[in-house]
Image (cartoon, rainbow, N blue to C red; front, side, top):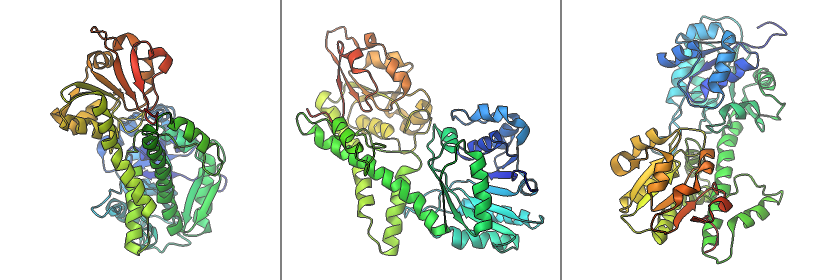
Length: 444
């Protein structure tokens, strides 16, 4: 890197987060080389189209091909970059802790390649890791493999992303803030420079040591999940109080600046690849070091209760043996990911209870059916799912579901269809003449 030029960047791991990171960096003027052990991903990146469903991703890759390449050769990636972002999986183990095995493999690979490079290089751990990881086994593995010590010739930072699948590109371009855990000011300055160029606006940058940054990452998600479970707890209470309305209550709560409105909506429980496991990991960490994490544990219990709560609600309106249609299987709109999806869990629970369950999702139907198997029936069309059901559940707030034709809901026997609209997706006035729309947290 020469004075006045942007650092060259390598991204290690071209999956659901790594590929968007590489594309966003390239779109903001950086020369980026991706590194992955998966030849399919490497070939796809070089061809200009990744097999990953994420809004704006492939458009960015196609528009910035001249600054974006990929390889399976770590030596090439290191020689052609000044900073390496490591964004590989850290799966949860049986204790709830995150496993660093893929991160440590990456440290060995990068470290060996660094032995053949002269000059400064910065390694950035973007994967979510347990507090204490970067300063212990990750640092030790990188130093052992590279033959260097973290310091003047080798920077090491912890820098997790705060993003959601389905909006990864937007979240990377417009983050609320940047979190940097740094080995020293040289590494932190370099990483801050990269981010201030990458982001469309200039977000505040929070710089600290490794362990504080590691704790901050899982603390943010644990706090957000607490708000979600609190809102769902309120919805359950409002359901049991005639005349109470959780939307009215949470709107008033959110108007208080000490609380804020984000993530304060009584609906389904949280799912996905981050929120559930980060909350469990936070509680597991507290137990290991002898601290109390009662709030995190209660948050998890309330979240796990939501599927039982919804199953009980269905039982008030439909008997076993009737046909239930569940619309929306991904854990949130705009992604095909069904990991820890409450919609999928609800479908399985209802099937076990003896209901005939038909499911539909614009992107996640195949993934959900792979999990659910023959417990449920995959709907061949949206209108077919709606027309043929005895009770309809709108479980994920896909925009497509706002366009449901009320005529699909009319029944030849004159009975009104009951719709459980968990995210208030359907315009109530549009359907008032043909269905009974029920919202969570509206006292009945």
